Image (cartoon, rainbow, N blue to C red; front, side, top):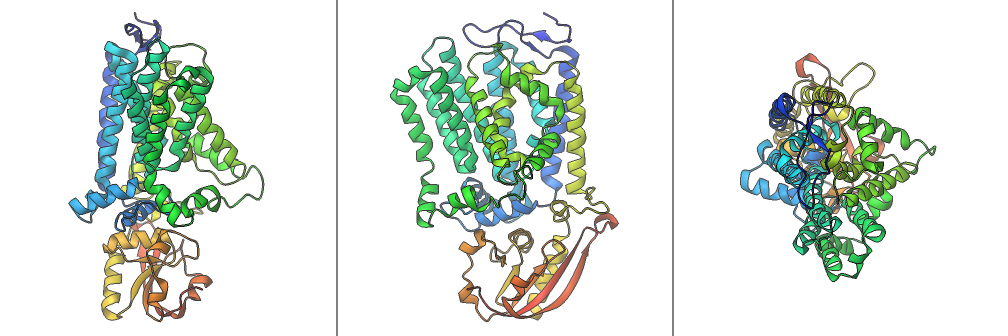
Length: 503
């Protein structure tokens, strides 16, 4: 049946699936969506191949060079994959980005599986529109660009949502729900917890949904078995925290939240992040997903519950600390597979496609060709740090030959990681006074009295706290980072003599 929006309704599956009247793309519109999706996938692969190393991406790579049960900032799954990739493919950009590319492909497969479950024989239109929304929503584009924990969180969340959706959809139409689906959903939820701590919002959302709408499940032992499975996968994190005085959990719950001068100072960056990385174009479909009473497809109430739990927690957190847009990734992942069902009016689709495609192209140019965010009066460190490391690494190697030193260091974990990646040296260290993962690798007292090659730049200069750690610091060389003639950063190499460990 052709609707006024030029979209046709797919057949309803027996017992489960789409309600009559739910529509999907067809005909010429479908071919246009497919063409744009393929073009964006090619652009994604180009970004993964040519974009410079992202600041925190290098940090997590360094984690992989120091295998452990878990780590200070986040759980270990991302670092474990980097360790495996580097062991197989060596120390290079291919090994860095291969896990990201594979996770991106897995994301697409998960969306395909969910579309098959939602739309049955009419899956094609729903899948391609969902894939388009995935590719042109900036938050998803960004988290699938780099080897940050978020890209694995997204992948594991999507597979967990798929299996939980199968389970709760069966129960919504009077069936018992397959225990296999419940266990697989719990398995991927546990893996999501090994990627990033905020995966817990999906588990809490499912718990809230069961308490409110499916209390009969509370009398079934398989629910608790699934919960135990998800928790059992956190054993490495629990063991590491137990051995390190709960350092990671205390950092997540307390250490990274420095407080605000005014109660709304944390809300502003969250709102700005949502406006940019979700876009106002999707606000109405998201509102419909969250609040519509129409039971378009049964069984996704747990996803709504997770959306509310995650969003509520992040909004509440914004009143006490600076909050980043991607912290609410659980909510975005929960809505993504079902958002195509609410893309009305029709013009929202091409508008979001245009905005998202422009964003993707701009991000590729910014991180792979020239930092277009490098404008007068405002310099973007994340973009600037994507350039200029090969010449700096050569200069550091030359300085090491001329001045035998005990170690190479930088003033912060970000620059230490980027320099270490460029040098292919896992022993470059951070001398920041703020606690980071380097504090678990670097035995400062063992290097007392040694000289060091020290790196600093415009964003991470040598401050008094670092100067106090050496008897003297002498500038050796300054390198200007100027891709395509644009002044982006200034790298400075120092000879620091007589290391004096803090404390």
